Length: 581
Image 1 (cartoon, rainbow, N blue to C red):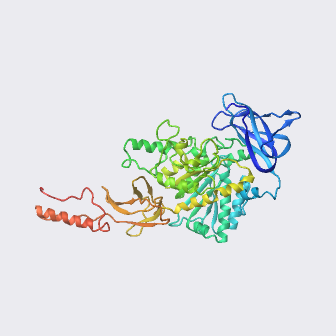
Image 2 (image 1 turned 180 degrees about the vertical axis):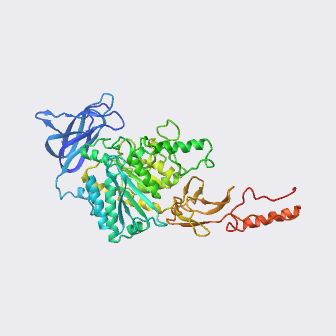
Image 3 (image 1 turned 135 degrees about the horizontal axis):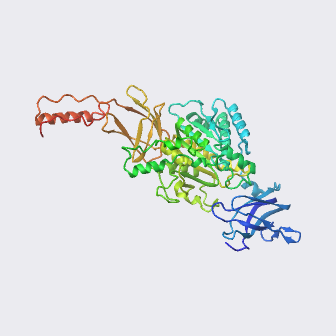
């Protein structure tokens, strides 16, 4: 930790023209290097220190942990290996820093080792960082190329007035089709985490091209799903980060909205409201365990709510999304709700939802198909190695955060939302985008396909009319879902179901969904028909003898046993008249 003879070494794998070094402190602690030397080698045994005349050149490093510092070499140096040797550091910290090496590989067509291991892509996509105007133009190009399956719209505006554009990809864009689930990807809620933004721009190009080429997998996905891609939730923050550039944007420059709010954690804290109701034993009789209402204070004009957050919230309420993923940066892991710890004051502690097994499956579906997330041999991005945890973690187990988009989506809507941290580098260089696309392409598609895993159905009465806002309960899971308000459709992330009538004190019968612990069916369509209220019971016999009462009870039992199509349930007012038993 305090040895000035320590160094770390980078093997470029072939001769490279090195031009400079960018250093940055550690984001979570007060660690940064204040000075360092640079050495070069072609065989990793003999090293030469970069000099200024006859003296070893000492580079000035960082003065704090946030702002990156660029040092360029007096002249480019061609070598294969480079070493950074810290010489001094913050007195209250240790030797720890983030380093980016600047250089260009030299042409070497005979280097078979390099060509074999170089990550390349055959996809003909636009691999570059896009400004706001370029992003809008690219979305228009995709729409022009695939007008029959795409539609561009905006969900609102940012603080500075930039529209938040989304693209819909479906066989009937603009229409919510019965039986077709709604899916969403969002990116860029933290403006300096730009990889997700570019991945969604690449994804919309890929889906369009593959659909036109007749790829059966993509055609089935698009025809059976209504996909929404929102690549830049925080365009104002992106502009700040992009102005500094991918190498010098820093840990937090552009992270927040223009008015200084963290959009991803700017939603109402519904966890505390639910947990307080549970502690008072109000759930489910006095307080429902789903679709929790937004507090009045949050809806006031004086509340600290970003315009971007309000736009997202309205979008989430308007469209009956079933599954969603928000792309983040700076790590390689998928997190799932809850994001807030239940014990007060706990910095991190497991906080599972009632649907924890489903969330774990969804998270693993992305992580396991990513090229690096579950690779135990890869280096950790920072201090925590998530590859040892299969590339997934409960959000609160990592760090607690109130008002996350994931928790709000789960508690206020029918949508299961997860966060995908898609790369160690929040703002990778443009040249790295093809490799990052290859790392994430399959995961992005597989996760979308999970929207069809579970059950979906329509709730109708005996006249065939849809029943809106019907509550669907799953036995053993203390979190219900609802059918739509405009269409009697619902979707639930369970693997299989069976039904049984469950009588209540009201005049209608609920159906319990029994969870089957097997992920064998991708599609299960279920149509529920709820019976009308039961007719009043027949009048009692004229005389009240023990024999008549027994016959009457047998008659009632026979009605109940004949099936719910004849009678749903009896209320408290349905009693057997008697004199005495």
